[in-house]
Image (cartoon, rainbow, N blue to C red; front, top):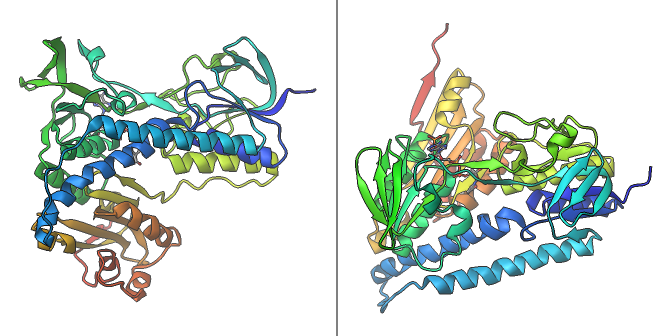
Length: 458
Ligand code: NDP
């Protein structure tokens, strides 16, 4: 049978763009559809603008620290519209690069919504039907706002926060995950009065306990008011402000409410029911190790599959799909020991097992932990702690996990991730010469074990 294209990709985000480009490189006639902006969540309203805002927020610390280093800094004032405009310019530039790279690779770009019409056909919003030998679902995920309380329509998600017309001087953040924590840290430093509430008793479920508690303390010190075990019960808009009732009886008046309570895979109204693509309980597309769905010829990559919802993972999945299907190179993506970072200030960088996970899975677990004041904070007088922690298998000496709370923890964990992936032992780290004076040198100079946990037989 003759198809219009060899590959039709739905969604021009991180995973979809990579898959289309690599497939085209193997000679496939590839087409990608995007209903919003080329680049997807990461480039347009996720990782990239978030990191730019994190940079903006950290000037507050630099100004405050400057005096300790002999600088006299005059009036400092943050201008939100200037930052929003600068951010917009940069993401527009990046989106254009994504577009140019697709075009250079020979991929056809369709800027409209596409839905699956049949096992090998896609219907565009304009009514055009395209036949495709292979279909790739790369539609990502969207914010899921909870809890469903009266007035929730007055709250915003991470989609809207980047482009607010005016700076929210009083901000309530609901949730304790990546997005909630990063924005709390950013807006507090930019000068907002930030209150963060969540159902749990601490931030960042799933991270190592030392990192969770350490970052919570730093964020408290940065002025964030935490409310654990409480959520909004009602939101009312009155006199240009939002009046929020919380489950513990507190009442708050704020300018904006950011709800960051997780993301839902974008599988609605995609025509998946037309062909019987199986979804899991969370509404994500079910895939095997090759990103294949239960329907022959239809694959899915990235957040829509809800495996590990990180850009580099989506990119790898998209690349591996194209290598396998169009390049004859069957390599499954390895989802083990994926390093990640939380871009609060200070940052968390983590790879591998937490202490709690290691103690569940291994008989002997050794912990090496160091907490110190970073050198930069000494002259500035800033109260700040860096925490580094290595989780080691006591039997084999292998490093099972590494966790860093501190400046540039994201950069450090990227490199330490190589060692953990290569199954480095604690002795390998010890044998590595330190770079002095750095914070990272602590990772290779932690000689003394902080704790050993041995599982009792039976
Ligand atoms: P997370 O899964 O990280 O956090 C969700 C938060 O919402 C948790 O605090 C969770 O509470 C809470 N929550 C979930 N459901 C409810 C509910 N029904 N009522 C009240 N609270 C609820 O999601 P995010 O939205 O922060 O981020 C989505 C994903 O995006 C992340 O998982 C991550 O993969 C990715 N991301 C990665 C970043 C990075 O790498 N730096 C940055 C931003 C996003 P509880 O803990 O109690 O379950």
